[in-house]
Amino acid sequence: MLKRNFDPTLRLRVLVYLRMSGDQQNKRSPDQQLAEIQRRLKALGYNWIVVKIYRDDAISGRLLRKRASYQEMVRDIKSETVAADAILVDTLERFGRVEELPTIRKMLFDRHGVLILTADNDFADPNTPQGKALGMFESMRATEEGRIKAHQVLRGKRDAARQNHWPGGPVPRGLMLQSVMKSVHGRQEVDYCILVPDPEAAWIIVLMFEKAAETGWGQTKLARFLTAHPDIPAKYKPFHPSTVGDRLDNRIYYGELVWEKNATGIVDDQRVIEPNLAEDVIRVPDFCEPLVSRELWERVQAVRQARREAAAKARSRNAEDDGKQIKAPAPGMTLKYLLTGLVRCWHCKRSMTPSAGGKYITEAGEERSYTAYVCPGYIAGICPNSKRVPEEWLREVVVAKIRERLFPWTE
View 1: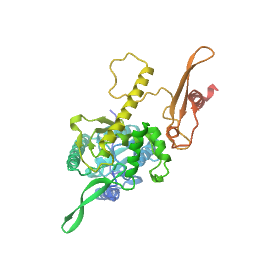
View 2: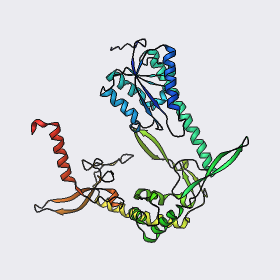
View 3: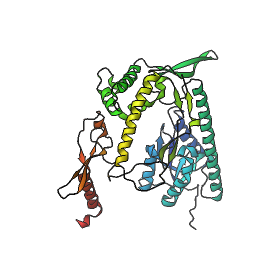
View 4: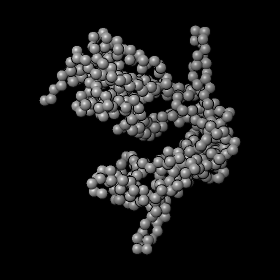
């Protein structure tokens, strides 16, 4: 059995990681975390050398890939840009999601000899039997504490929604928050907020619905129309097709709140959205003043449903039946083309999507189809890049370049 001794009396080289989750938290939280780490080191008499401090401000611990300083720290350790014996954090929760910690700890310690130590347990060695037991207890405590907090927050938001109070989250375009005040010990404080029409933007939403009902246009054409409209302020542009579609489907515009429609979670550092059961979805009729009538909203929905059915029928005609009887719960994304998701528009930096043309017969009698990468922003009328990049040509160039880099001796 491999053994690595941890002697805190040595002059260890350490990194410090600090994090706060959001703008609503105490802005001095990272500074307070650093002060607590320094205080504990001094009290314990550890003469450790702080090599570098990494800090992520207003970033959730749920997604590791979005935490720039955390990623920099891991890269520095893996590339040996910094030589360190341990990473110091104030509490386990500051480092990240508790369920991922055992894997991260094992990777950093086994491959790079770096421990993760916390100030709240006096930087105890997590690899001793006592440290492992304490680590298990910390994980259970943090997980349960997170679950209880989440339950209490959701309970409060559900209650607020039922009382026609805004439960939180991004405010739909065309509406705005209005604070309702209360007096506490002779001082005015915000009690709750309600949604009211935004005088500056409400007419844009009305225009969007009326144009959709009048023309039967899809969300891409509507996005182009709104982006080109001379009376709409530039700060609201450009309009994206997906956003237009989401707004046309949102019942809040005829006054009904549909809340907690989906549940979210993190799987393999990816945000996953799943629909909740119908009985778990909160619906509040007459939640706010409507911007459009329900009759207009339903007319637009009828047009959109007809377009969806036509598109689904077209896809079913082109789809190949692979004979598989049990489908995956989530369809995911089929990467039919090798570079899908990797080709970027030089102008707007969007991910270019493969667009297949009609099938044709070659002189040799083979049936083929022409496919090119095109910027979705250009299709939506919000990007000037009309360039179509042939998929086959780009794939051959990229593969040749990779082969040249990996196997130079074959050239």
